[in-house]
Length: 221
Image (tube, rainbow, N blue to C red):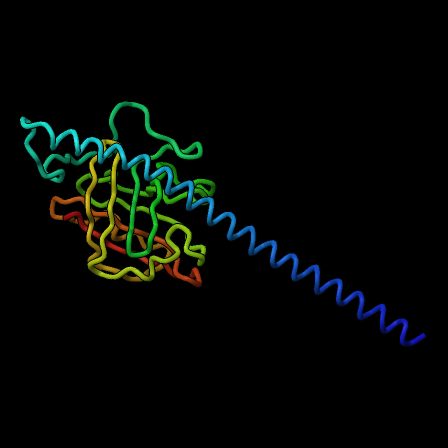
């Protein structure tokens, strides 16, 4: 009688353990699946988006009457997002104001215009500033999911690393990281800062325990 009850208890415990293991494997599998397909979809979008920049550059260099100019020289400060025409490209239903590529941590994402819970679960987004590749500082935020997605690996970035940003007018600028620090979630004192007449970007995300914000400054070359 005792052995029968003991056997039933062990069976129940075994079933619970198996269910827990299956649940954990399912969660990890879903997390991997979500990360893989989000990254792949973002990569495909960025590849198509930046291919137009390459096409434009090829056309310009083949025209003998075209004079090369520094993109920074032609940028005017504005409080509107950069882009040509009235229609913005879209990614999963969100307006896109540009793309960001960071080779040091192997990420490529569209930069979404709107900051919201759903947009930040889809890609990175522009929070504040003059606009993508515009003179002044522009803040781009992204989640740290601690799994390599979005800005999870920003902690690995260092001064001197390059960031490539392309806007909707197909201007592609190279930014160099020159400052990295942590601050409180409420600190926005550095959003509006003197950039000496150049475009700058600020990358913002949580640190690994979400107690502070990891901030990165980068200036256009």
